Amino acid sequence: MNLINPNFISFVILALIAVGASLGVVFCKNPVRSAICLVISFCVLAVLYFTLSAEMLGITQIVVYAGAIMVLFLFVVMLLTTANQESLNPKLDWRLILASLFAVGLIAVIGFRALLPFNQTITPRAPDGYGGPQELGMALFTRFGYPFEAISLLLMVGIVGSILLAKRRVR
Amino acid sequence: MNGVPLGGYLLLGLLMFAIGVLGVVLRRSPVVIFMCIELMLNAANLTFLSFARYLPSLRSDDPAMLSRQAVSGEMMVIFVMAIAAAEVAVGLGIIMAIFRLRDKVDVDDLNVLRG
Image 1 (cartoon, chains in turn orange, green):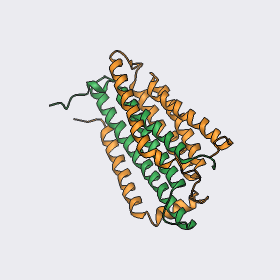
Image 2 (cartoon, chains in turn cyan, yellow; image 1 turned 30 degrees about the vertical axis):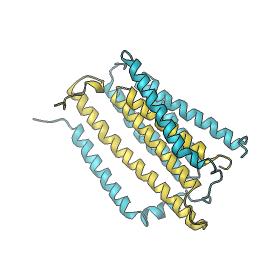
Image 3 (cartoon, chains in turn brown, red; image 1 turned 180 degrees about the vertical axis):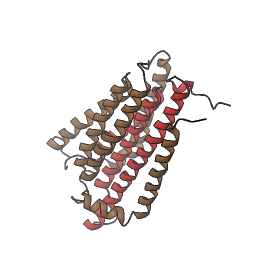
Image 4 (cartoon, helix red, strand yellow; image 1 turned 180 degrees about the horizontal axis):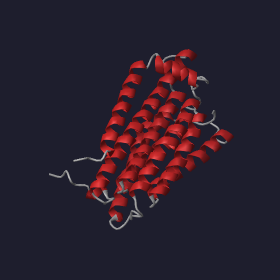
């Protein structure tokens, strides 16, 4: 397996940007900076979706996550936090140690049990050209019709619930 | 993109998921905790897509069958995205309702339901 090729190097660069932005989400004190880091991470993930030849989902990722969800987050952040910077201290020490141990344990267990069996898989088996809008639309409205209807019902319930929650109670 | 092994994508997904777990445990602002949950959902999406690309089906070598299975993996990502959108809408609504009740940012202080 030859790992020194342009594709792999660009993948490593993208992955490093994604991991760095994810760390920024966790360790930035200002919530707005965390949100910006999250946008960077989502955009890098969209590029990675393109490299996995899931073009339609990459576009959807940018539109849904970097567009809608992040606007929602920033809106709530600016509505709520009136300059109350969350201090990661004072009882940070044991919490940071415990959380780091937990995360490292998670990486070790999952990596050992689930990643090692796949280290021989190098070439993709799926042929190119399955990620276009046409294929996705065909599958969504034929084979996955019932899940599609169920998810639309769920979104409907979500809209009604969030309006009810955000409404001011009039007594 | 050829030349990248499946393990690279899986490792990236695992790292992002672990960072999301770290944030959920570490942070105390509920909005940032929601962002970390989004990070974990995205890591799962990346894993779904990489498996759809690399190992859609082990039994068949038919290209039509393989792309059919790969599209199934992409469908799962679409449903996860829709659920994430609904979850963010409802969760931020709940956070707004809580913040109207009290002016604290700390999730450790949200013990109204404690018996």
